[in-house]
Length: 176
Image 1 (cartoon, rainbow, N blue to C red):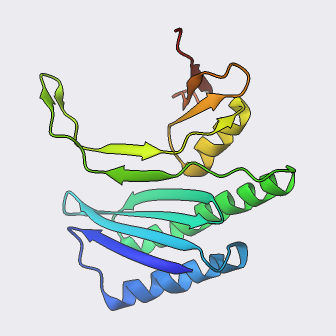
Image 2: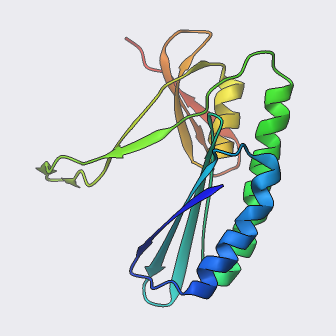
């Protein structure tokens, strides 16, 4: 697996980098040879540290993020999350006859528009899939996001599925 490390307000040491590489190597048994892991390290408020790991492999995308007081604890928390997501994705793929490409994000430069509500500071573009509501929920959980935009296979309309605070899911479908 190829590992790409980026930092924001955090100075990683050689020891941390080798620990990250060693621990992520444990996931190689689940992934293709061309897999890529993006690791983002950042400082939050001076005393908290965030680690975000995104893994791209064979059309799949899994992601997890955690913030604690110790960056070494972060990797220990994230590794089981990622392993669970990868095994879940693999078992789901083997149960289906056709291979579906997972949601992929591509950040782009955001426009500098300012309104009375604030400004747009980030814009994302992504491929949209025609899938069922159940598959959209699975994709959202694999990505560890709170919402997922997709084309509903039943209605052929762009819809959004989201996770509610009570643990259930909501569905937004436009009327047009």
